[in-house]
Image (cartoon, rainbow, N blue to C red; front, side, top):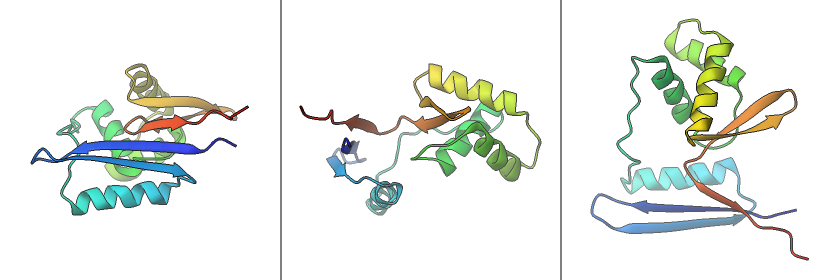
Length: 132
């Protein structure tokens, strides 16, 4: 089984640079702890604020807020969208936007059974190849 490796490079407002590497059994909880540490150090992510007046902006906000790490499906986005914005949306609309985000390199998509699974591309993820 290949080890997971995640590398996070950051720079704070004062110009200090941080390089964090996780190797081995990398879990969602461990990555979330890193984000909590960044929050404690007042390291903010880029000034990218989604436009909540557009459907695409609302969908991206759901992804960013509820699925910063880990995989998700279009059905999960549909549930969160309708809960958060209290308005109906078609699954086909969400799938279209997720496909666009994938084409733009904002998320990765892979087949999971009969549906697609998505994951944000905020972190540089590398998988070691098995050694011969």
